[in-house]
Length: 623
Figure (cartoon, rainbow, N blue to C red):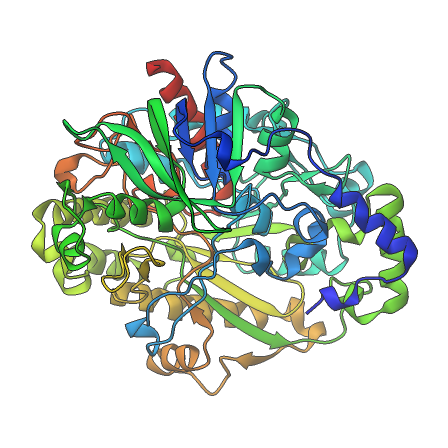
């Protein structure tokens, strides 16, 4: 929508070519790898895969191959922060969900990267962390070392924080705490060089509506309003993706190899047991296949959609799923593809007027402003083009605890813990006692977190353009990832099961009411806000929910898929332990967002950098 307003002309085209400079070194041909053995084969060249590949290849005698379905893409859409205002489907898998029963049987696009760098190339560039309670919950589920204290050093290790420009900090009273960020990590974290004037007004309105004004939301207490940095290299004004941070500077390492345009279709196990020995790889270009082998480990980093899919294709998964797809069962593991989570979201909208100039949409509405801004960006890599989606959101993050959003929150917490769990879970939970026991353990922890204000229940985006986006942070509904029995090698069947649990539906309604309360504040009257989605005609809880679903503004995903191969004890339905090894196997580990047992109350990017850094240390230590 906004990209149609890019400046045109020879000067601009010449500047765009700056982003197309080839990356040195090591993109490899599949022909040289057939039947080759590496120390480590990493399946997936997204965020976590590149982090782990970088760290493993620091040891010069470790040979590492990364296999990525997508290609290496470096252009305006992947580099310029402003390009985050629209999706980049060229670098995504073309995959949709199965019909969502509780969302009028609609199907929904699933935003999953298929590109070197994965989600760090296509996301909105938000650099947030959850509360300490979010990560301590993982430890409470039987994962020693995976709480806040165990992860914090890796949050710092992965980042290099640059404070905002002094004039921005002074004008907008921007606060931060440098001590909770890294100062020499690969991922550059900073702030846009342009903020928009309405940011002040909207932030003040949220504080007036009860939001805590935080110094920095990255210190383990994220519940409130904080300034939101992005993964932008302030020296170049470009996205600091996993590709830019962990791959490009190290691409010439002779022991680090990247194979793009190839998909791993099967894990090869040795004949005498579940010892991962290598993988089968298929070319996207001609569908030819080959094998490569791993002497030390096969490391899965294909993400929460495709890691369980690959395990199932390889004979590890629910017996029922594998039998339906005629896959030979190597290990009955109902945990593979269960426990799937994301952050459901409701996209309310208001018509507003009387905005200050410039506002984030001025680049689209005002040709002169756009051309001036583009000239500034190409000359100095500063200005409105460094802002992007986060600028639309007031350069801020906003998370609420349960009492700040839900009337009668104590009753809601009681409902969470008193439900009959099987009434609101997929059928597979009734067939496997460990899965059910694990969910009940999760539910108890979630109830405690929300009841004691140790985690956020909701993210409400502090938009300055009239959108009112709200995301549920602790859903109780659980989805599944399964093979397509008619064509197992095709894309997996993804069921979010959004709003299967009625507590989640209650939360959606409560978030709509909170947004309405906010936009009715006197401090925002100057904008004359008029709600048009879902619409003021919906007033009762039942009307709000039904109207929002009918309008298509309740969606199952905030592009944070996770949890589908959870890190929990096997007796609680876990797939991997705290050492990240897949239960019942050897030389097979998982390092991506599928291992998250309970989704944290935050955007996942920074969490996954920390997880991958810790994972790399764990794998290096045992090899």
